[in-house]
Length: 283
Ligand SMILES: NC(=O)c1ccc[n+]([C@@H]2O[C@H](COP(=O)([O-])OP(=O)(O)OC[C@H]3O[C@@H](n4cnc5c(N)ncnc54)[C@H](OP(=O)(O)O)[C@@H]3O)[C@@H](O)[C@H]2O)c1
Image 1 (cartoon, rainbow, N blue to C red):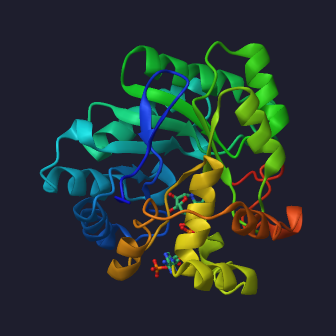
Image 2: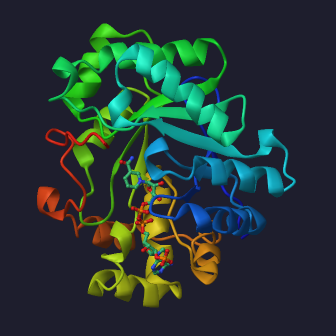
């Protein structure tokens, strides 16, 4: 079985590689090397954000790779301080300038911030619709949106988000948000797919890994892939960057899938902030 990353169709007709490389918490000085390594191994999808402070280094690595711009799928996200439409327009231009790119493949509202901006994330979304119309964002989506936030966009906006990027891993399977996405043609992107390492010594995960002769990280990432979600594990360790790329040359049977899904702890399994309450605006 060849290890070929699946491309998935988005609701706007574009496609996205199901496996990418995440760069949250990679220091700017280490980013170009890590992304360069990932591109060398075969990753063709990079997930960054203005908040991560390493967009420039992502752009640098893509250019240094010698790959055509069109062969690498690049996502970035609008930072929390820029939700007002005029700020969003300026922030989006800064993102493109930092990346030194004339378009991104996907641009997301990073957090809904329902307790900020008088609860208005709809005008922010309409600014993203402009970026898509003028071709500078090939696809647009949201991140950390809960079902009521998605329902509000459905009622008040024109474009259905292509993706919703939310925390998902075996301890927080996030079924309600994923089900809404399935029903409305919004793909789920699973952030912190291995819960930043916390799920890797779980006895069930370790047992499944032993049974299929793979590592705990590989079986958890494969579980996401078989559920149809998009993943972009982060690592600055060359061996792990390689390990996390080997997901498409084995399968998990239904029993293994159900055992891993059974580890869900609901809200107690959440490792990041609750999107209904999160209101952080970087200084
Ligand atoms: N939209 C959002 O609000 C949001 C929030 C969080 C994350 N994200 C995105 O999702 C991406 C992934 O999430 P994440 O970075 O939080 O966490 P993650 O990918 O679940 O885990 C990363 C951690 O696991 C370790 N690791 C990676 N591969 C491993 C392996 N094969 N074996 C053992 N340990 C391994 C890494 O260590 P080393 O680096 O030391 O190898 C790192 O400490 C981010 O980079 C970002 O792009 C988005």
